[in-house]
Image (cartoon, rainbow, N blue to C red):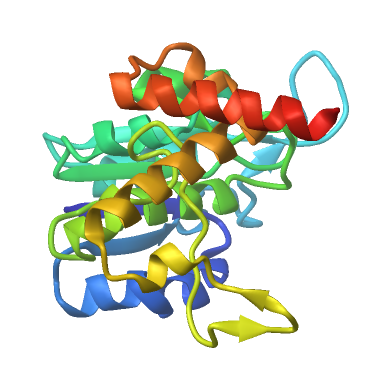
Length: 244
C-alpha cells in the first residue's frame, strides 16, 4: 500500500513517520508513506497557498491551484483521494477496514478557514475524525494513516487486531500484567488459572460490561449470541443490585 499526504507542514510528520508501528511498517516496505508539500506548487510569487474568500468573511481559504497541481503530480490511475474536512464522513474502525481495499491512497490536509470548494470535485470522499475543529487536517491525516497502516497484513499480528476495541463491535476487556498485586489491588484469579475457556468467558463478560456502561450504543445494532444475551442479562442484574 502507498499513502501520500498533501500538506504545507511536512515537518509535522517527521516524528510520526519515524516512530513505533509506522516506522516498522515503512522499514519492512509493507507500507510506503510519502509527504508532499503543496506549497512547492504555488504559482504565487510570494509562495502563498491561501487567499481571502470571495464575497468577504473571516480567515483565509486554501487555493485550488497549488493543491490540485500537486495532486495531479502524485496521483495514480488507481489512487483513492481523501480530503480531511470536519463536514466529512466520521472516521470509524469500519472505514479503516474499507480503505484497505485501495492500494494507493492520497490524503489532502485542509487548513485555515477552509478550502476552495472546487477541490471537492477532484476527491473521492471527505473524512472527519470527529465533531470538533482543528487548526488543520494534518492530525486527521495521521489518524487515518495510523489506523489503516496497522491493519495492513504483516504490520502487526492478526491476533492482536482481533481482540482490540471496536474490532468485534465491543470495547476491549481490561488487561493486566506483572506484578500480580500492587497497592492491594490484585489481578483476577481466572487470568492466572491457565484455563483458556474460563479466561475467554471472563474476557467476553468484562467486554460486554464495559461496553454496556461506556458505549451502550454499540450494543443496539449488534446481533447477540445466546451466550452474550445471557451474560448481558446477568450484567444488568449485577449493576442494578449495585445501585440499590
